[in-house]
Every structure is written in structure tokens, then in C-alpha cells.
Length: 77
Image 1: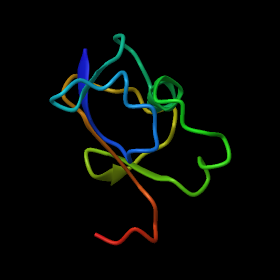
Image 2 (image 1 turned 60 degrees about the vertical axis):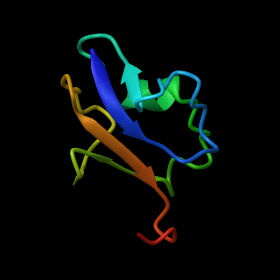
Image 3 (image 1 turned 45 degrees about the vertical axis):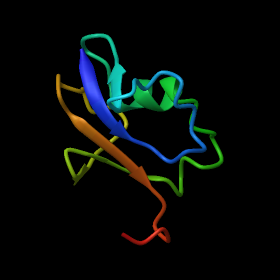
Image 4 (image 1 turned 30 degrees about the horizontal axis):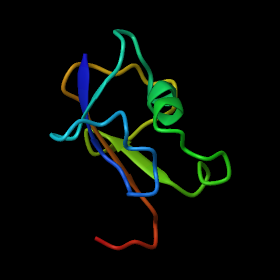
């Protein structure tokens, strides 16, 4: 299944296609996305992540077409 990912440039974007989609297996969680993008452990506490523009836990199961956004609290926007 595919989810849309808006990630900062410093994350490993090799898995994200040119349309911003990331392919994950059915039943994947937000934690799986963190692993696939190789989010450094030291950044995880300060990196804000939203699924469909709502705060989500790492164990949230993803659905086809979900939108995942990453940003820092001081980045503005």
C-alpha cells in the first residue's frame, strides 16, 4: 500500500518516489515508516509527526492513502 510522505531533506528519502509516496506493507505502523526513513533515534523526541494532519502514536496502523508529515516545532509554517 502507498502513503504520502512529507519529510525533511535530511531523512533518507530513497524509499520515497517522485510523487512523494512511500510503499509499506499492509498493516504497517507509523513506527515502520520511521524505520524505513531511518529517522535517527536522537531526533525522534523533537521531530513532530502527523498522520492525516492529526497527532498520532507510533503504533498507529496506517491505511492506503494516509498523509504523513514530519516537521520540527521551530520550523514554522
